[in-house]
Length: 357
Ligand code: GDP
Ligand code: ZN
Image 1 (tube, protein in one colour):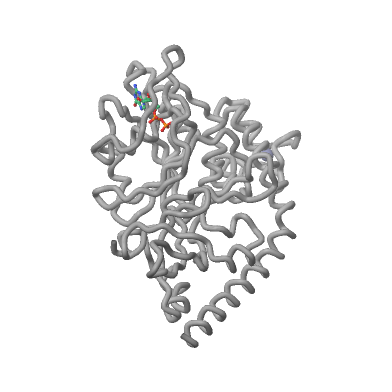
Image 2 (cartoon, protein in one colour):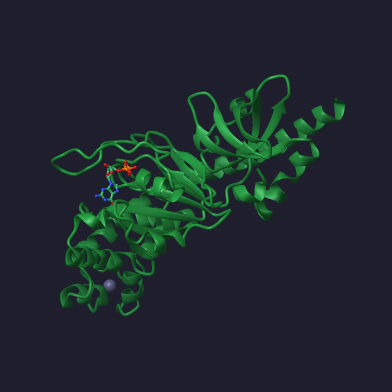
């Protein structure tokens, strides 16, 4: 497997240099098991475990490898496995606050695009806004995929798609059917060799079905629809990176019930660019669009140009993002320092050991 086909690039090359000199190899994390990781390397798919030192010196959960990460591995010729010594700096990452916790959980790393998948039969615009804010924050480009178009009459599907477009702004929206194949050709243009696309969305919306379509065969298990509500049951249990036959890289993720922002001040602004644009017409620059006079945003709500629910959603996400960032600020500064120390120390130690061999 050539690295370039796995999404390797110049930034990774530069970060890897010092490890390469020590005789180590790069690999990309495809799947995380309980104890080990499945990684793709130049030698193909191998099993890898975290080195004792890495485990010992890594205090922050989000510094452990996540699916999509580039890691530095050492082959143990006598054993059929590898050891992971380090994680290369992430180009992008999709994070959320771990459910019920206070830590960052990296859902997928080094992604170029994120497809937010939703079913046309069960749209939730507010949830979509939240997802969009998270994707904008990740550094990847969002797109929206609306599935199950075959279950809607054409005018209904068109109206729902229109509503989603209003929320999505500049983000491309595709309405498709995994059943009939409608719309899939157009969507396929989003898949490109060496590019990584993550699929995100609640379970049952058709993420696995979509990957099977892209694959051209039934690779992933698709659960039968429960008869009454036409929702699929929870099917995907694990995050996994796949290399599709045409060279595109796809990360499947399990449906996430809770999606709390981790960071998001920038992402929320990006996801609500229309509100920001309107706000330029407010009398006060720091208008909060609540009770201020001459507020262009409130005026837009009154005129029906902006949905009240969308404004409330913006406010809620803004507050959540501000709260999270404040909370992380101090923590993050300390962690960054620690990380740099650990990476440099690790590289030095490995190099020394290699030199002695
Ligand atoms: P996932 O949990 O998001 O991976 O969803 P699945 O791919 O497992 O699909 C859940 C259920 O929805 C399955 O029963 C699929 O057959 C069904 N399904 C997925 N996409 C479509 C679609 O476009 N149209 C219809 N009618 N059913 C679909
Ligand atoms: Zn205002």
